[in-house]
Length: 257
Image (tube, rainbow, N blue to C red; front, side, top):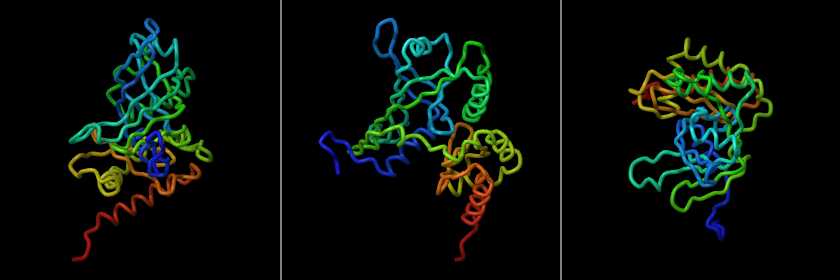
């Protein structure tokens, strides 16, 4: 049912679409308020979602949007890439929130690892003194899933619940390194058999993980495999990855003629 303002009710499909747009984003358009004029200022930024789905950006103090966020943390981030045909027919998410500069060294180190998993070329400048990570805490979002598919989302619709999985952040770096070093064959099957990625896009590597799934990359191509159901506790990660590998191998076997 469409409401008088043209919005549709938020359901699980809308939530999955919105979270998929955040999880699948590598770049976005960041809008801030220019402290010199009070007017809007938009820039392209590289994005990496935190484990709960909060977008994280890495920006230089030399940029206009860095100073703008220091003066006023309110920001909007547009995510979603157009494909073939009419660009307005493709899903996009306009997220509104407040940007928080990451000051804690331990938190910065964790986000650095996640960010480089998605943007390995940022290794060239990630540790420059003028660069800092910022997390955008969403206040809400406008989801446009295509013509006639508009939704107004709350933070709970966008973010992944972390109850019971807080320890996942502590084990992520080791799990990612282990999978990339010892299980390249399983990662390729995850991407091609479970995420539907083309077989010639590899080699695939694990970029990051969260309670709702894993993100894989091959060059600039990103593929996501969702956990169904999501993890309830961090200790479920290993058996879930093993079960995914079994499912991917089963899908890879030729079917009897």
